[in-house]
Length: 352
Image (cartoon, rainbow, N blue to C red; front, side, top):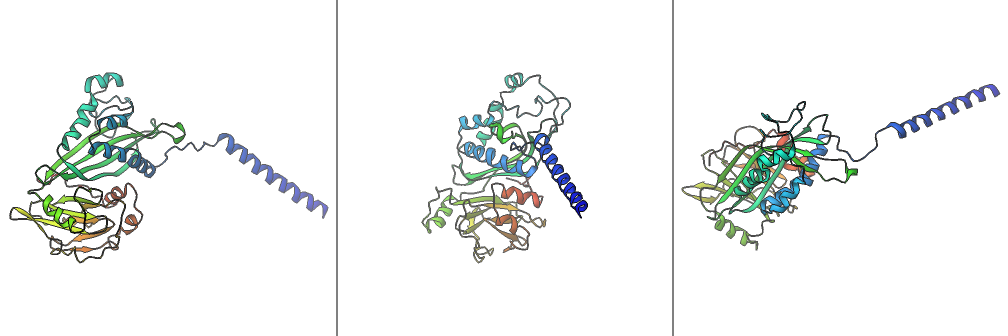
């Protein structure tokens, strides 16, 4: 009996020693948690919140100092032919020439004026109402630059122009963001930005006054751009741009272009009869996307999805569309998540 007790005691001591050794080894050799981004989802969320929000705010308000601050002295270029990458790295798009140093690159390209100046010009004379900063792909840039992430980005701004119509700028972009470990105290920054495709579209006729009447019936001034959002799209394939509007309290308006003017087709197309499931959101969202791939653009209105049935009627398909889970837990990149899941980017070949 005593022998058995000694054996069990020895086994227990051995187990305890083994656990202690494993614990001490983990303390000595395991990587510390320094707040480093380790996956694409984290990279997308941080890029959207830490870069996207201040960028869109500065862009739409034409705040040049704030835009320049986003570069934080690390911007390597916005012109793909003139980027100082290492020869053994593969950037997310083609480069044909390398510059020896970042200083030389800046002197030859004057990045800010070339890139951000063009973006600012796109919004000249436009009172912006709606914006989009949607990340549809995020991936490691290279093993060598562990803090760098390659981002596929959809950017848009929609607002009223000086004629009372609507102007919309859209672009598809490749972005390289630098996201240092949180422990470093260095904020995320833009390292490279390349516009791949872009498009400017305008409504065919003024609509601002018409919309003002609809909003004022509820005591809302059209100048309160935090209360509503809007998007442009040809919903009935007649080669004209139609307009959708969503308010924070869930009201929806749809304007079709007919006979040289816009008419309120909200009731005609069935949107007035649809139940409002979410009567108050922090930020109203209006966005067209083709969730079922039938060629007719469906509508995301706040957290509801409406299927475009041949340009004749919109029906609430929030549950059966499969996006209810995404919309039920909105984040800064909710729209990007939605577009990525349905592989739905903008039709940038749409006619003006």
